[in-house]
Image (cartoon, rainbow, N blue to C red; front, side):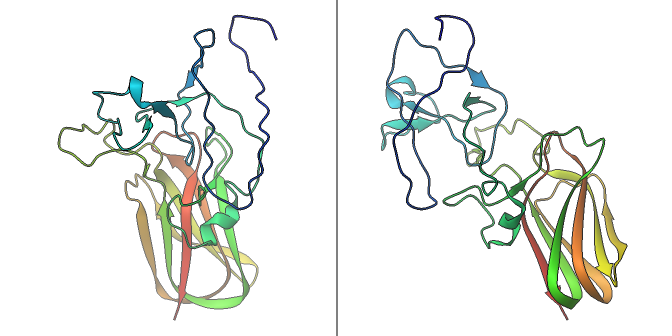
Length: 222
């Protein structure tokens, strides 16, 4: 490793995580090292800064040594790939928000020239009467006081355009088409129960984020 310039530095971590839970990596201040920030924000990844540098800021925390940075940036970090962190199975785990993990499906980064899709297959056909989807609306954003100005009219993470299909006897049928969505929870009641084998959510656009992000898929039977 050469001094200076923008480069990745490998930090060995000799730690064992016994169960799925939050982890904190603390680096001591070093005046010879600068840590770059990135505009790419990921669910479940938060940046904390020592309280000696956050005094007087609205994200300081007098009850902790750290203040969690709010806004549009995180410190640059690359972690080992784990398919379970943002895997499709998360939409069925019962957690509608981050808790001991991200608990949502995140697609690959994309321009949506080709849509991203998520499919839930049932063990046996079920008479569906209602489908529910819970999208990401940036639950980390701090908007609890009147002096906090929302930076976006619509949260960029929210799915904007999507289609819903059900598979009946091997053939897919569209049951909902939504454009310009700005809601986190969407409920689609079917005109009549449909004996379906699977449900597919096709995301065609978000309100800005270059990834599809979905917390939960629910299907109710008659």
